[in-house]
Length: 270
Length: 236
Image 1: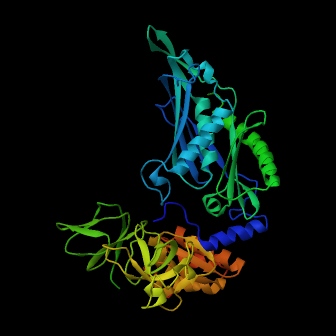
Image 2 (image 1 turned 135 degrees about the vertical axis):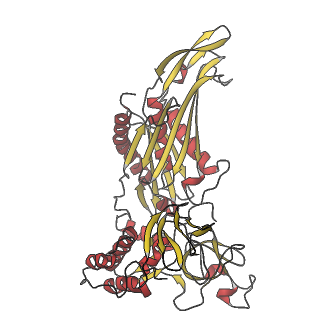
Image 3 (image 1 turned 30 degrees about the horizontal axis):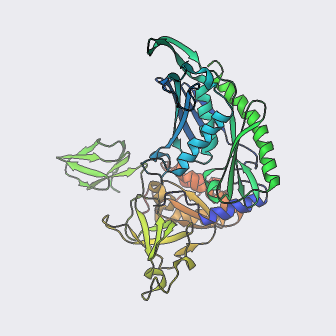
C-alpha cells in the first residue's frame, strides 16, 4: 500500500473544476475554516492537555513540566520542546514506526510558532542558572487525519499550554524539590497558525486531506496577539505569486484574530 | 415458506443449540451455534447464518470491485480495493499474452489515482487478490461521483436480483457502478447524481429497515410499489 494518501483522478478533477468556479467540494468558501472544537483538561495526569477537532482532523496534546538541565548555549532559559507523532490508526495508509519527515516537519513548524511568538517566557523558567530549569514538553498525538494537521496541532499545543499548571520547584542544596504548589505557565502571547494551500492558482484556507493531495504548494503563517506574523513555513514544490503571499498574510491575520478568540474562550479559567 | 427466526447477536452469543449447519460468521462449538460478528442472526430449518452489521471487505473470486490504482509496478498495477488486501492487476491481463515490461508502458493505460471497475479473478489468502478487467463494462471509470458505503450493506443496495440498484439508476437516469467492496461510482446529470447519492446513503443508513424500498421510492419521488420479493433478502 502507498505511504501517503492517493486522491482519485476523478476527485482531483472535481476539486479543480469546483475551485475554478470559486467553490469547494464540502461547500465552504475559499477562506473558510471547518468546524473547530477545542476541549481542555482531557488528560488527568498531564500538567495541561487539549483535544482539538478541526473538521474530521483530531489532535490530542499533553504538556509535561518537570525540572531539567538547560542547554549549554542557553543556561538562562527553560526548555520548551514540541514533539508530534501520527498514530498508525489515524489513517488507513499509516504504519507504526519512527516519525517520518512530514511528522517531524509538523512538530518543528508548530514548535517554531510557539517559540518565535515568545508565547512562553522561557527566561522566567529558570531555577538556578546553568544548572536547573523547568522543562516543558508538549507531546502531540494525531488521532485522525483529514488535512491541515499544522493548524489543528498548533491550536492543541497552544490550548494545552494555556491551561497547563506547572509545579513550583525550589532549590534544596544541590538539588531541587517540589513545593507542591501549582502555578500557571508564564504566558505572554497566544500564537495562531493559519495554513493555506494553492490549488491550480487558487488560494484556499484550511485544506482537507483531499485538497492537500491535489495542492501545488502550502503556506503556514503564525500571528501573535498584535497581528504580527512571527513564523512561517512554505511546503511542497509549487509556488505562490507575490499577490497570493499578500492575501495569505491578510487571511492569517484576520482568521488568526477569530481563532485566537476561540482559543481564549476555550481555555478561559485555566 | 419456512419460518426464519431472526435475532440480534454479538460475537460469542449462542444463537441456537442443536444440529444445524453453520453458515457465514457462525461457528459450531459442541452443540452450540456461536455468532462471530455483531449482526442479525438467521436461523432457518437447516442452517444458521449471521448477517454482519459492519465489517471490512474480504475479497472473493468473481466479485466486482471498484479499485483505486495506488501504485504502478514494472509488471502491473496495485489497486486499493477497500480491504486489507491490495488488488493486483497484472500487465498481461491488459496488454495480452505478449506483454513485456520492456515494450509496453503501463502508464499509458492506468495511472496512480485512476479508478477501475474490475473483477476478482482469483484469491486464496496466500497471495494478494488478482484483478481482471476482461469483461463487458470493466476497465477505467472515466468520471462520476464516488460514494463509499459499508461493504456489508452492498447486498442490500443491490437488492434482490438488482432490484434496488436498478430502481435507483432508472429513477435518476444515472449509471451506477457498484463494487462489492463498498465503493460506488455514480455518473449522470448533476441533479440525478445528487439524488442517486442521497438514495445510496439512505440505503446505507437504513439497511436494516423493512420498508427501505418504499423510503427510497419516496426519496426519489416515484410511486411506492412493493419489491417483488420478501424484504431483507440478501440479493446474493
